[in-house]
Length: 352
Image (cartoon, rainbow, N blue to C red):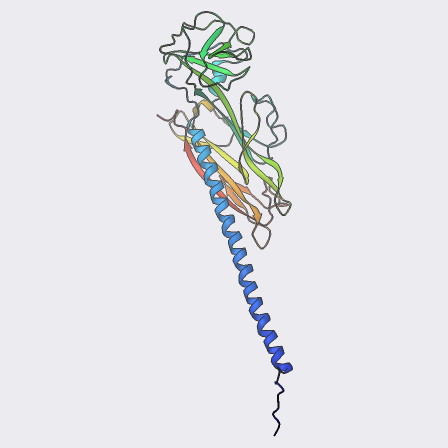
């Protein structure tokens, strides 16, 4: 009797069932993978927006709290002799804080900047002024000549046209640097001659034992296009700063799309009103601004939403609307994640 050595194979139905099960398993695995990847991208976008917004607000908080800082000089008993030409004590006081509404490309025409900033229309900008203490010491008494000699350790980052303050904590002189500061050995010579000052003479002799040298900084903060595109071809905006005297724009935080600011002005009644920079009736008295409300609209770098963003974001009573809406201020729309961050900040040197 012969044995049948033929092996029975799969039938067509069995083969089709096995293929179907295989595709179902692969499809399910792929779906889980894609869903996991999408969730991860969304989670990363949330973390990115949160980190950018928190960092930007904390940075601005630190800077705003230092508005008007003038070292050991009392804010109430200010005695600054301003000898810098085209600059008065009133301007020195006012420039400690100024706000701007960016309504056109010419928003900074009348401002104390020597360069143009391409800020995003529909956003707010502001500038702050303060002094920055230097560790460098006078080599001897500052007498009635046009030079100040400092021990240049470490090397100072100062330039022609910078405003400098010399103080002994009772009085101070604010002057403009005329020369290109030059170093011989460890000695740095700064000139405050009448070429850019009303006079070459300071109000008094400052002794090296109890005098402090400081540099006056004016810093402007604004929102602008970085010129970069994300992976979907969308523009990336950022929070920028620019410091005097060159005012070279420096990117601080990418993804900040809009900034709105209200200024807390203390009135004669003792009450505080929060108003925008272009408040007309009555206009802001900038010397009386003692706090600020800052709101930032932060956007993720990548698209993670399923549809374009059609939400309206409230930023300090300003509605930032979707593109193509009737509102004058619009956000970028698109499928990127957005969130508003807001904070009220007291100006430490003005709050009693």
